[in-house]
Structure formats: C-alpha cells, structure tokens
Image 1 (cartoon, one colour):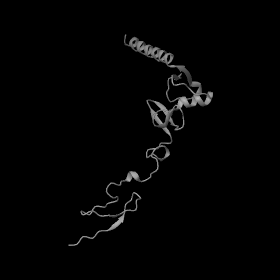
Image 2 (tube, helix red, strand yellow):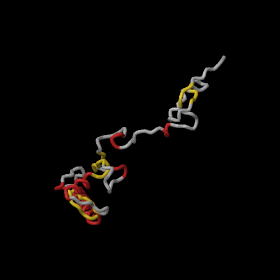
Image 3 (tube, rainbow, N blue to C red):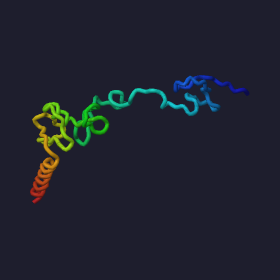
Image 4 (cartoon, rainbow, N blue to C red):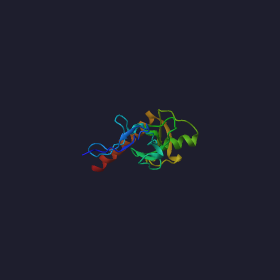
Length: 143
C-alpha cells in the first residue's frame, strides 16, 4: 500500500511546505520546532480579554477601575476607585503612604463627601478604635 502525502504550508508564516497529515492521520499545522507562539496575536488584556467586565473589578470589598496609564496602578493595571475619585476631585496625586478613609465604613460608597485623605498611622488608629467599640458593645450585650 502506498502512502499519499498531502502538502501544505506551515501556519507560523515561514511558508515552508510540510505534510499536513501524520502517518497516523493526525492534522499537522506547524513544522517541527515552529509553533503558534510565533504568530502575532491581539493582546489578551483590557477590552480584548476573555473575561472583560467593563473595566470594573472587585477586590477585598473595594471597587477597582481599569486604568493602565495611571502612575500608581496596582497589579493588572487597576486602581482603586476611591483613590481615583479623590485625585480627580482635588486635582492632586496621592502619595503611596496616604490612605483614603471611607467615613461611613462602606467600601463601595465612593462619593467625595464620604472620602477623607489620612496618613496610614491615623487611619489604623481610627479602625482600631472602631474594632474596640464593637468588641466592647458585643461583650456588654452578653451580660
């Protein structure tokens, strides 16, 4: 029995002729050593990503906004929305050690009236005081 070889071209773009069927009948797309990574593709982040949700992400209760050109972006080109709202309203650039405190405690309420710029040590003092009050009120109700 004679084997017939069907010739085709490598899909990496090198224009090399290859047998497009293996001896077992499987389809071959690339010459050995060539692969799909050489093919130019669209970037898979931002609007071209498979799981694009309009540029909003939720992380630890906060809303993050897709902003690839922001100088203080966190991982994956996102910045927390409350920082962005504060910077745009006051036309400033927040320093890395500056925290934004949500006055009413709701992490998703990013109205400018609810945001307060504060340094990290004072921010921790405020939240530790709130935690102590909650713990004290909880123990008081048990008695």
